Image 1 (tube, rainbow, N blue to C red):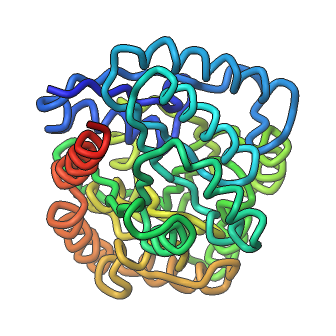
Image 2: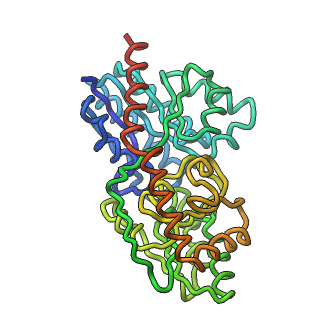
Image 3: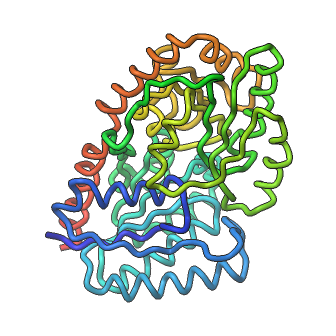
Length: 361
């Protein structure tokens, strides 16, 4: 059995990365590999992507922790957004520390803005340099895979779909009155939350009564982004739920009737897959691989980003039609079971590990 050190953000951080890491621990991957987790969460005010003294200190401290923990490991698996520049350099520093300790390295790119960031020759060259210590790079969405392959070469990049433990999510089948729209994610304008608030307000004004629950907390870019959302979320039908621990998320999805993720950019959003597994119809923007997960008109609706009008139209259709919500939710659950389960993800990552170990001999 090979020994694997997974490096990433865990509790108290919340979101897709900590949840995905926990999923790997419970997957078949943990039966065939000895997995250790090195938690490198944010402890101070979030400054994601900023070149600050605090981030430099944190990166150096985390690199030392990686070096110490990696000395008896075969593989170090680094989770990184790989954009913007500060994040790329951080991934490089952690990868170098792992290689100095004698481990093979895979960098797992979960970021949702690589295509935009890799827009110039300097950044592409910087990424090539920073990724040199890594034997493989894993992308979680097709556009990211294509961009990374074009920059790093096809031999180094693999696409691995995010998977969920579908059995953890049980559709309730009990509608709420009025119906409830659920958003799960960071409270920041880049997640389209202001667009969702405007759409919800428009639907409410058309006489379609509903509740809007916003589940999430402070984003990586800091509290100012969250403050912008909180300032706009003042309608009586809007509820700011706050963050919830991972063990409560299955129940949280059960409290909704429709799920909405109106992001301006994404990779393959875990929240969409969890909502589908929970039997919720999904309204989401056409970013990243959302349209590969959500079948427009069958498991939900896929609408253009930055369009509160399109969001409002899709939400209104579902909020007015109980039967449509049920049928789309069932179809989404079946799609999650067949295409986006954690077992398939575990097998794909195990294949990447096998390649790494073969190259590292």
